[in-house]
Image 1 (cartoon, rainbow over the protein chains, first blue to last red):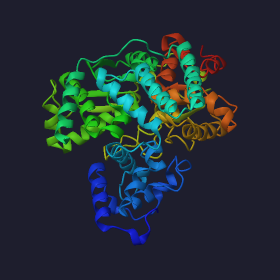
Image 2 (image 1 turned 60 degrees about the vertical axis):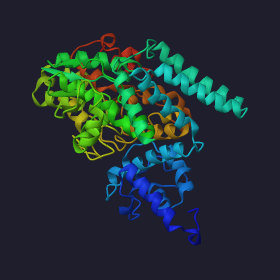
Image 3 (image 1 turned 90 degrees about the vertical axis):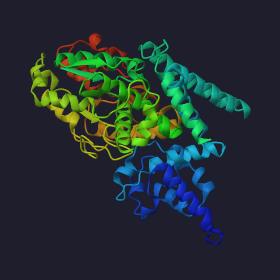
Image 4 (image 1 turned 120 degrees about the vertical axis):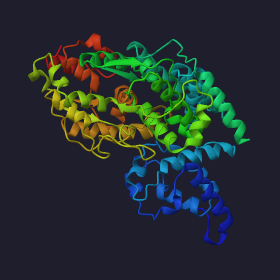
Length: 203
Length: 294
């Protein structure tokens, strides 16, 4: 853990665990660290020392920064294996999903910007047109990534990304797996109105 | 029998073949898919990561439209759409305040009551009634050559909330039962509900390649000659990335990734072009020629 015992702040810890519990709908206090979640996590090899049980512990200890900026929050694939196996029914994927949103609200640079870009590009396309348009949101996702790399003057990764996507795109095109037309649902207006109302309420 | 049908965005784009096959195969079983009008994106797994309210509101609108058709059941072939819609239905039932907030802007309100089914639930009803067995038009011996590893992925059986799960969570059997009705013996294997990485195939390639490599290796070790799937995301990932992850993880074998509707369609005597099996990214026709199905 990143917070040493003498730095423990009960008030900060309480507010963090209450916020995450309420927003994710999970009872984090029920975790008794059996680590069944850690044993089954498919991305365990990618997330370093942060396993679902340890993420819950970080939150209980009030380490806000560590909870918002770690590999598990960003690389969790939301497969729901940990939550399905948890003897106390804690769905950690809902916790990582909540922490992603909290990181965004705190204006933190996502640890894995590509993952954040993808999900927002997808959802924005779904709300903008009423249906997710693969070609459009993938295009926006790629441009966002290229702009980020350009800021860092990382031209090598732009070239690599372009080549990967061009290869996949070409083989999908050949097999008629790409759809060029725009899919639209007239009912998107209803969704957009709901979104607007919900965001006004938040403020 | 008429049944409401929610195709979802991917069945209208990269997995349009699954839409075509589902309609044909269900028709062959006497089930007519009635696409609900002007449906919208369910938000998929992205909504839960970006906006919890939209994750409920988007599938809610589709539920309202489906209920307005007056049909008793709606089938959703895509696992992500199925999961999101079932979870939203469950939550709205428990949270009348949220339901009222969302209903306020919907022209077709959510009441509750329509049964949301996965493609397997509907197919299993047709297995139980004997309609699947009756629909076979090819020599059953040719079908026996399939040695499939049935791959369910995540969202067919695991949900973020407690919803009624139609199959065993750790060892589902739905696909195996459908294939058995065709005389096909599916293999026992260990990775049927492991994750393929979904969107991580694009955003976190190393992680998802490692996941898919584990799935591939076990299927190959068990002697599988193909995968059978129901989820368009799993299908696209396993179909598109075998050449990328194979060299990285020392896998020389390539396995075709069939939708369950393709196996059913072939058994009903439909051809490769009719089912659009020629749209696969990993060769899926050589095996069919070897089995003398085409």
